[in-house]
Image (tube, each protein chain N blue to C red):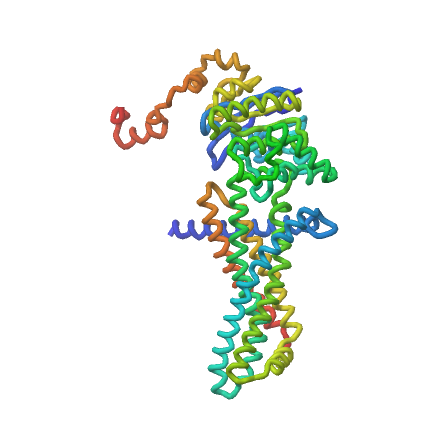
Length: 267
Length: 267
């Protein structure tokens, strides 16, 4: 039984369909990468998986509970088993790094302060930030902030680790270090990892399977090898970095046909 | 005509939506309040609330005191210039004492708190929203209303009435200084007259107003923060909007309460 099962998921914002009947199963212990260009709907799918938004229709079943229809206490229980590191890291700027990591432990456990400190140190050590716990987030570099966010996401020992654009905005070396860290943490903590990214090297380094999103639908789902071998033109366009002709979008075509009689005018 | 009706309808719906959101937020906060209280609640919330009290109350004391002194002088001078003509300069004491206790103390404090703290609430929560910190709280199974809003509300409920009492004292002292310098009235006589002119009801009605103003300032400021959409520019807009709306609502509430107290008071 998959740990996460997405069925016929439809999401609309102001009548605009962003996710169009998605189906996806994520198995225990695998690393699933949601790959796609900007605006393809991958972050929206992520927000559905972690229960931050409710869909127009369809279901998201996490550990046997449909989080689109469950009660708030049930959703809270599910959330305790999911660790999320956001794209912006989303650390609390008024708290030190170790207080950020300690926050979920203080809120959801009855551990004595010395044990909380120990767990915090372990989580920070796991991401290579053991010496930086006393600093405020603004004193950290971009890569360190992301690692601190991962440490916080791991604080409660989640079964599912969700990473939103972990390597976005980082230089290639730091991004590669973060990829290795994700692989290490997956092995060390035996977690299911879901990563949203549009960075191809990262995706192919860390993924067990890749789900490729294109305008709210999956254009391909498969192993790294299957995705590399696919001949789907939209996947190939993304993998081969072929630019889209923006003047050929339906809106632009319709505009020129309406006002200039023909689309020849802009050729 | 159709456009006018459409705009009126749209505006009405938007305002009703805003009032409805304030109501929902108020009830959610009241439900969460027991977890902010000392001894029975979560000690981290209470600590957060104490920090907020320092910011809303202690840090605002110099400004509120100075505003009250200036207003006390102005009120006494304006009153004296008219009452002197009728040989009734002694009524300046009643004017300042009753005016401050019932009206000016709570109102001045509310305007100062709205400008300082209401805007700060909107900016803080708005920034948390933009930087995904609120989402981060939700995925850690922590409710932003309990974590962010309730400590601010409790702090405002305690600090604003305290500030209001301080404003009353400074305003009345300023009136006493004016009377001393303009009529050589002994301070002891002045304060004796003050105590004779104000009643317990005046103090209580002033405090009731302060509590209502604190509720308006905290909830409008926080709601404006929660309603931030988009990027950092919308945080600036929400901050301005928090000050404008809370000041407006404070004055409307003042008018309503003054009317109620006027018609329910002894003749």
